[in-house]
Length: 118
Image (cartoon, rainbow, N blue to C red; front, side):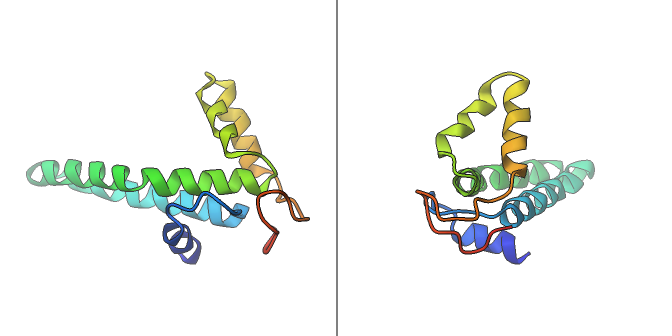
């Protein structure tokens, strides 16, 4: 949970680096929290509330998700513009997943110094 909160505190910070742990924990908790409103959607009397809650969470998480993604790409020594490879059908998402799973650069790179390689 520490890593999720850390990513939220840097919700609009596109500079610097995010370790694998920070990125993947943020992603895991993001999916868990995104699932919770759908419990309300399953209950007929609370379906509208659940839909509104799910939409509000999705909109609120756009910027933090993009920021932690860019910082993760910086940690592997790539520009944040590499995120656009995700829009290439099929292979783009797979390639981006491979980039996210790579180790951090151990040495300092042009984006920031390495404070916590994982």
